[in-house]
Image 1 (cartoon, rainbow, N blue to C red):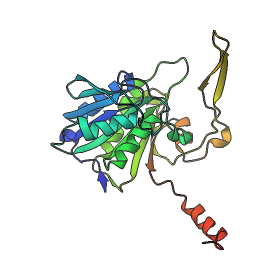
Image 2: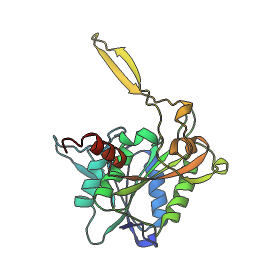
Image 3: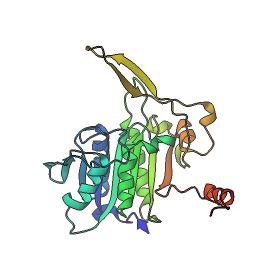
Length: 265
């Protein structure tokens, strides 16, 4: 079983992200972690790694740089950062009790989790049998990011989870809405939703006449707003808390395949 310690004050916490070591979200999350514990380490990519997914750097060396006491950068992905933090950077004089990944600038809901480096860092921590939580905050075009809302509710949810035990191979994703603190409707447990991925391909021509493309933007349809999902509840103004697991096996489909393939099984 994994467990967030009931008393976080002396718990060793790792803070990481996929927006890079200098992103405002990781500064907010570090401040939250330091309000809960006196033993906080920050190890994160040196540059933005959004969309990196659960990728490892295998074909070039990784380098680390110490920026401050307990604060390091890694020349790789969020997954690399967690792996190096746990195996090389953080001393093993006491166990690492919690990994916090974020706070991502933009939500990680529905199918986003398969692309997200923020989610991937929590996945890597889970594979290392360390309680791990991914944290993301909704943004709106041409609007200031409401980090105060993220800070308030992330601290609240983390405190409420102290002492919670769950099976290995599972982790938690938290998303906060783009609303002022006093307009958030509350905190809600949610299932993973769905939304139609509608990547916008922006084709352009470089000065040498060669085509290139920017990928960006997702859309959703009203039919995607299914009751009780992270997508729907966030859209309604709630903070969403979603348990996720590393085992992607579809048990129902496994049974269906067993019946269909009976002749050769």
